[in-house]
Amino acid sequence: MSALGFGCMRLPTTDGFMLSANVEEDLAIAMIRRGIDAGVNYVDTAYPYHMGKSELVVGEALKDGYRERVTLATKSPVWQVLKVGDYDTYLDEQLTRLQTDRIDYYLFHGLGAERWKSLVDLGIIPRAEAAVADGRIGHIGFSFHDGLESFKEIVDSYDGWSMCLIQHNYMDIENQAGTEGLRYAASKGLAVVIMEPLLGGNLARPPGDVSAILEEGEPGRTPADRALQWLWNQHEVSCVLSGMTSMEQVEENLRSADSSGVGTLTDRELGIIDRAREAYQKKSAIACTQCGYCMPCPHGVDIPQNMQLYNQGLMFGDLFAPRFIYFRRLGEGERAAACEACGECLEKCPQGVPIDEWMPRIHEVLGEGKDYPA
Image 1 (cartoon, rainbow, N blue to C red):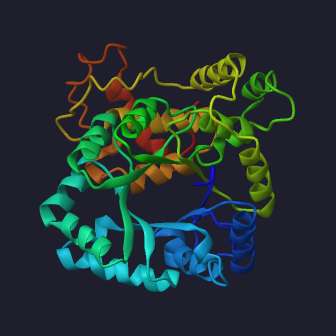
Image 2: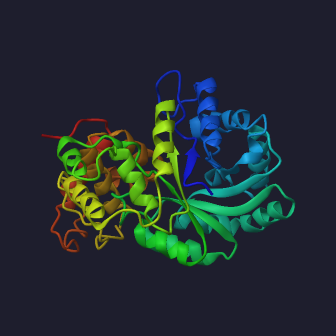
C-alpha cells in the first residue's frame, strides 16, 4: 500500500462549498489520476460523500485502466441499514456507482459502541461475510468515531477485520482511538489507515505562534508536511489518507510522501511537534483533560466531547468542523443543549470545571451559530 491514500470527501467543487454535490468533475478526475500515476494505490470514498456524488466521480476516474491499479475502499451507510436486506441494497448500488464488480475494502461507516451493537443485533456480519464469499467485497473493515474503550471492544468483537480507519494526527493523540488505539489495532494484526491527518486542514494553517515553533524544525517543510511526516514516522500506520481539493495540494502531498519513512524524525523534530501541540492547547478556554470522570451524564449529554469541540474551534480559529460534528455526530440528547444543570457532574470533575455554566455557552456557539463570547 502506498504511504499516501487519496481521500475523496473533499473534492473540488464549483460552488466552493466543501461537501456539496457540485463536484468539479474534470478537475477531480485529473487529480485522482495524477495521484495514481505518481504511485498512490489506495482510493477511499463513502456513500454520503458530496451528497452521493463522490462515488460517481471516483467511478469515472477509475475508468481507462485505473481501477486495476488501485485498492478501492468505500463505506456502508450503516445508519441507514435498518433491516438485513438494506446492507446488500446499498452495496449493490455502490458497486453500480463505482462501475466495478468488486470493492476491495468495504467498511462499516463511523462505528461507535451503539452502532456496532445494532449491526450485530441485526445480523449484518453474516451478510458481509456472504458478500466476501461471492466476490463483491475483498475485505471487511470499519471506520471509527467514538472513545478508546469502544474502539478496543469493536476490534476484539470480530475476528474477520482486515483493517480499520481512524482519525489521528498530532493533536488527537488521546482523542477517539488515539495513539493507544492505533497501537492496539496494529498489535492485533489490523492494517490501520489514517483519516483527518491535518484535522480538516487546520494543521496546515497554524497561527503565528505555532508556526514560529514549527519553523524551528528542518527547513523547507510546510506545516502540512510536518503533520504528515509525524504520522508516517510511526510503524503502526499503514496509509495516510488526504482529502485534497486542488492539484497544488496533490503535488505537495506527493512530494511529502516521497520523503516519508518510519523512524525518520529525530527526537528534536518530535519535540518541536510536542511544543506545537502544547501551544495549541494553551488556546483552549475550558480546562477539560478529557478524563471522563464526569460521565455518564444522567441526562445523556456527552460532556467531554462538547467541551472538546468548543476548545477545538478556539484553538484553530475555525468553527465549521466543530459545528458539523455537533449536529452530525452527536445525537440531540448528547449535545450541550440537553444539559439540565443538575450539578451531578460538578463534584466529579477533578479540574473543578463549572460544567453547568459552560454547557449553555457551548450550545450558543456551536448550536446557535453565535461567535465566541468575549
